[in-house]
Length: 79
Image (cartoon, rainbow, N blue to C red; front, top):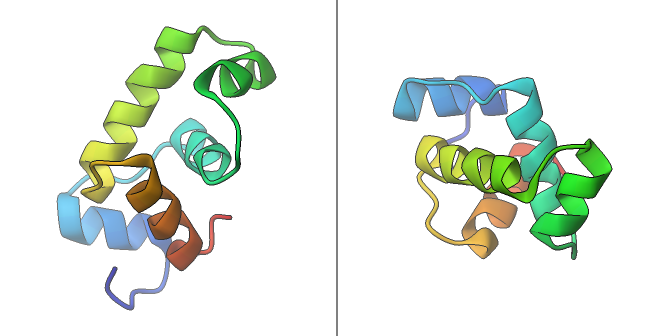
């Protein structure tokens, strides 16, 4: 990640679309040792909703794995 002021600014400048508030929450959860089912239960949504949000997060931050997304979250201060 480049050294920009905020995670949203970094995403917007790199990929043109900021993370939504819910995507930021899901991304922070991805950095923890929890399953998608655990995240869905915590957020009161379906597992498929979480999967859709995860795909959107990956697209927006340029990640292709959970480990990459977690590292990005850590570098962006979302964890």
